[in-house]
Amino acid sequence: MTVSFRAGARIKELMICPIYASLPSEQQAKIFEPTPKDARKVVIGTNIAETSLTIDGICYVIDTGFCKQKTYNPRSGIESLIVTPISQAQAAQRAGRAGRTQPGTCFRLYTKWSFAHELEENTIPEIQRTNMNSVVLMLKSLGIHDLLHFDFMDPPPAEMLIRALEQLYALGALNDRGELTKLGRRMAEFPCDPQLSKAIILGDKYGCVSECIIVGAMLNAGNAVYYRPKDRAVHADNARMNFARGGGGDHGALLRVYKQWADADMSTQWCFENYIQAKSMVRARDVRDQFAGLCERVELELSEASDVEALSKAICGGYFYNAAKLASSGEYKTVKQMKTVYVHPSSVMAHEEVMPKWVCYHELAFTSKEYMRNVLPIEPDWLCEIAPHYYQTSELKDSRKQKMPKGAGLSAGRGQNLPT
Image 1: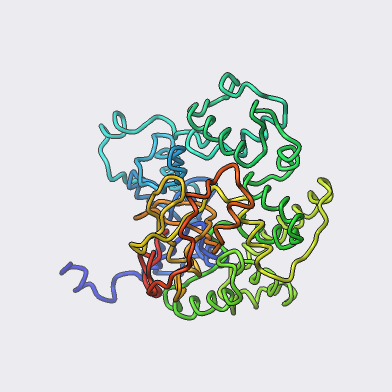
Image 2: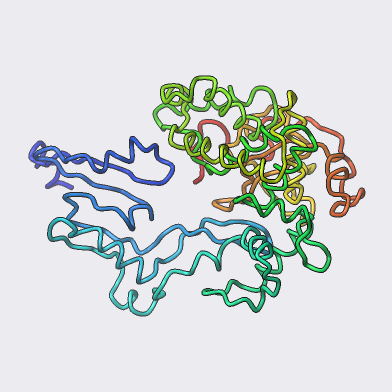
């Protein structure tokens, strides 16, 4: 430290360039900009920088030996983002980022013995650690019924397949003999999660197919719709809360983002002013157009509803499996498994003065806690109406709304660092 301090201005300027998936594309492009004379460039990246990237001038790679990997637990239905050791194949890919345009060196922060004896040879295939609902529905639509004996290249655990069959049966896509129903055949036409395709089809019943495909397209963009720079976090949070006005939770907010963007002629400048990622909006538009074409194929009229309740009922109809209610302790518990879950701090519901008694969520993600992403307030009567085969009246008792202090059911509030 003393030597560096005395060196003073003689030390070359250091350019720090991060690279990760949710970073806006114009900021991602900075890693490819030429390095100024008498300066050094350091690229700090996630797995996105592991393959398919060649950055001129990179001559050193520092490999930590770890990565964040998504893993799905079929018993709890939770997708976890866990820090795990990389594989030997990943280590080789990381080393390959150096020396592409000039000689380079890879420094590994683990021993040669650990590389040879503790790291797996190859990464666990994604099919063995992901939700199988979409895969099972697709195979059923292709006429493949014996899934447990199907010749997968990398066979997924039997428990995941059985769990997927149970959920598809609950959605009405399969009958009690495991055969595809008429509803299931229509659901299989949509290249998305079966729960979302069920919500789109139910949009016809509630007269809001157009809103459902917009929300579905925005959900397909993942968690990369909003942009929250650290130096303007308060402004970004205020912009997000403006979209939340009008109800409908995160789904209603996403619908308003898309509609206002469309009204602004899909302007990139509008995205910049409202802290929205333009690249994600373009992708959502393309997915929305694809959904619209498929709606004609399954004979769904692109109807539009004027109230948020119709959209909420349709979304609840697809995601009724993911219902949670507010306990007296101020925490949310899933209806079926009574698992304690929390509203994700990035949700617009995280700043509500009065927390709804009942909610429906898009997915559960485990980082530091078990978080609900994309939360929608619902009424318990909707669950009885939409899924009487799945919910008993006794499970939905005590449905009276109660006021909770701001922050109940949360683990973090506005202004705090958001988990990944």
